[in-house]
Structures are given as C-alpha cells and as structure tokens.
Length: 134
Image (cartoon, rainbow, N blue to C red; front, side, top):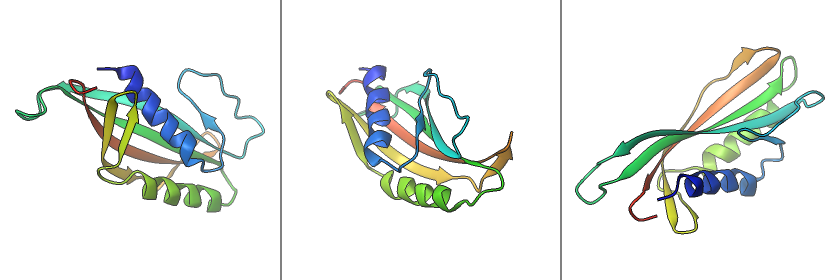
C-alpha cells in the first residue's frame, strides 16, 4: 500500500494531461499574482476499509481539480480545460505509480462560482485503490 503512490499517480496524470495552465500543487508555494488562469489540485483521501470479499482493503477519495479564471474575463480557456479534464478522467481509467493502481469511479463538474476576484470551476474525480494489491 502506498498513499504516496496514489498521490504521485494522480499528480502525474494532470501534468501529463497538460491543459496548458500553471498548476498549484498541494503544499507547494504558488503565486497567482499576474496569472489570469491556473489550476489547483488536491487529493482528498476518504474511507479505507472493506468493500467486498475480493477487495478487502480499498481506499477511496476525491482528486479535486479547480480551474481559476480572473473574474471579468472570458471563460473560454476554463471551458476548454474542463472539456479536456472531463474527457480524460473517465470511468474505469487506470493510473499507476510503481505497482499501486488507481481506478477512476466517476468525474463531476460544478457550474462555477465567484470567490475573491476569481471565477472557479471545481472538478471532482472520485477514485479507488486496492491497497492490498499496491
């Protein structure tokens, strides 16, 4: 089992997807001044426990990808990034780091919200990973 490998696989997936926007990673300094658009990523680990008799120790969680666009500007880049992300993180997509496999369960997107001079769209990628097999 490796929470590190789960985090690493998810982080590498958004880097490899390359939506063309700077990425604000968890626990890494990021200065948004001067940026008109960027994405922020967070891995939210959920429950760990028995799911079925064959998947005895599965961890579930949400990989949250938030797309920020300065208020008062076009949302075209945001919508293009949303399309790319939603098209990539489809049901049963498998990501790996070392031997840890992560499987996407579902992906959902909000309709956006305004906060502190930013228009923000949150995309939630629900995933699972069998920690006995990793």
